[in-house]
Image 1 (cartoon, rainbow, N blue to C red):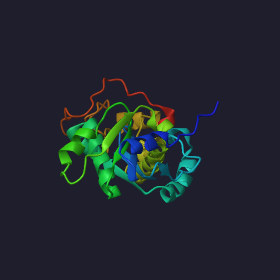
Image 2 (image 1 turned 180 degrees about the horizontal axis):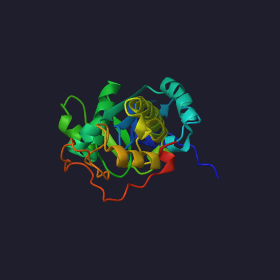
Image 3 (image 1 turned 90 degrees about the vertical axis):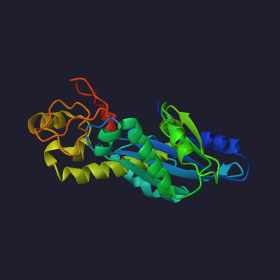
Image 4 (image 1 turned 120 degrees about the horizontal axis):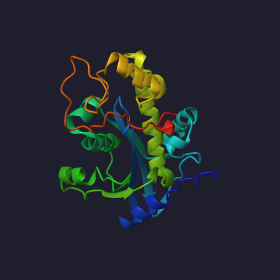
Amino acid sequence: MSTPAPTLDAELALASCCGPGRRIVVGIDEVGRGALAGPVAMGACAIEVIDGRAAALPEDVRDSKLLTARRREALVAPIRESILAGSVGWASAAEIDEIGIIRALTRAAVRAIDALAIDIDAIVLDGNVDVLSAELARAADGARPTPVVELRVAADRDCASVAAASILAKVARDAEMVALDALAPDYCWASNKGYGSAAHRRAIETLGVHEHHRRSWRLGTTPLDAPEPSRAGVLWDDQWHPQHEEERR
């Protein structure tokens, strides 16, 4: 049975709650949260809703994990043509080590929102942890109401703007990991995208960790010149974090 196509139903309902007229709703999704190396990326897609209507996104848009790499790459241009604005925000491995993954997700999401450079009425955020509301409230200047944040589990599956955001983030992060692979080809980042594949684990065990690894995540070995792991990061047990094949496709 095929997965139902995501819709803009949630985005339109959220826009309606904000009032009539022109409203901007942004779908946000992360990529790379569970990787051992490289940055985490937050994609953002802004949808313009005018009197309850919005332009349709490409019909093939799905959660990025359900698409092949080639299909994701082919969808980037059509997505950008159909939305009001799109962006990807980043937080580096060093930032994850310094402040922890949750605050790094917040930082990446805020950077994605800032890169849109538009006023926003509401946000659909994938997941079950609200990494945005408190930061948006803190940064509010009083000139405009703080955007409403709606947290939705599986929003990348059900909400078209979030699915599109997941594609933008996945394609951008995959390209970044291919670029980083040129700096450290032994870790096979071009193929595993920083996740815990067998080849990646073997390289860490043999060579130690690289500067683009998340060193505060207990990776099984530590080079002699590595700094003391930060307590802000996620510290795993001696076992490797489970690797989901669909995250690497």
